[in-house]
Length: 83
Image (tube, rainbow, N blue to C red; front, side, top):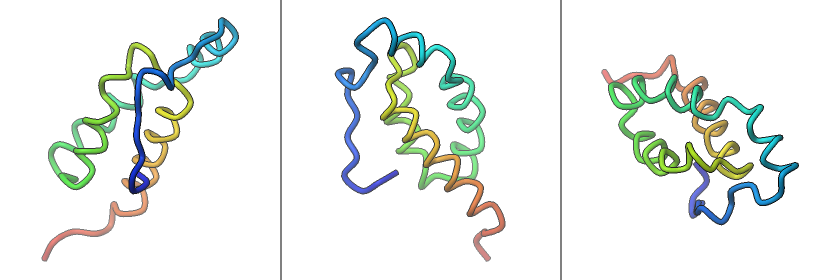
């Protein structure tokens, strides 16, 4: 997640058009799919996921971008581990 990134309920969709657009985005499935690996192996990303968890019911574009950044981080660091 970007340093200093802040998320709030105010970033959720406001208009019916925005609500319709956000319903097609699999935010809750994405959070669910990254929750277990993050809690078990990527403790550095656990804070980012826990920051985005409260917005499952009122997801906005900023929240979705945060989840995509976490997924990108997990994909780029999957071959790294402690020795």
